[in-house]
Length: 418
Image (cartoon, rainbow, N blue to C red; front, side, top):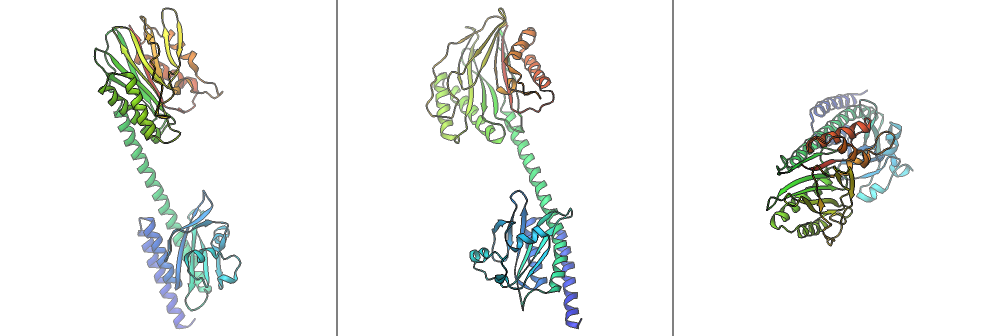
């Protein structure tokens, strides 16, 4: 080894040491990749360097950093970079266009002319492929054996720190998402009534438990004139953030329109028209809105796709399942809002407006809880309050499920006449 080569080797080792320090100190992925790119340009004395990260889900390589170019994505089965990832090896190509493996499409897209290149796989601490580092156009001729040795060292440093940073970024993103979901849940739960109304001659309770951090169900109590009370149970398709936004809009619109007008039909029509305008195709909200008149002992209602509604007649052990009176809200701006016959309540009768998460809860035998079990619980607990009945119902479906997870949101309003 002559003195020039010796000095060059010492300089390269010093550079690699500085690179190692810099990479260890980096706390963000994009600056880290930029450091790796600049280090490659310096150590291998080339015109261009590209860091391709490996997307295991799609089996693709993609670049976030490239000297003079960004945004390249291609199958890991293609090109020399793809072969470096598959074989986990260093591939040194002295004449790019003479090599059949070379993917000329990238040059055509970028306008860059590749003369020679070296590609080497980046692997993490666990041996998994993290990506490929590719250096193009060695100044003064093709890449040589010394460059390959430097590439081995550089790839060992880069692979581990890139994997570390990607894991840290993934963890940080997950933590932020969980924090955002917790905040969304708190906001959504704060919109639910703090307590049930006190109505002479009646006992009413409401309850909600989402299947996810946020849910697609809601309920509400609305105080009206003449000691009447409106109550709402709504269920948006699905559960999670999207349905939570849909059902929250439905609740807000319905509450605002009901409080501005005592006309039940007009409130439902106007709410539906606005939802149909706002909601994306395929989204809808099943909505029950009832008005209890304690003086007449009846419930006037419209059920937009929400059913069955359940009425247990205590005196005769009668079990009535009332269907929806019109289609769900948000499907079409026009909807039929004719009022069904009011629900007449006799002493000790119990009315339930619940979401399908209760009676569709399945056990390990793929058997649903069903409506008969709901009615049986009402008959077996004649002295229970409405709040107690909701608790009994929830405990029953959980026990019936034999450990199956809650698959859908659970929401209930139960009304019992004294």
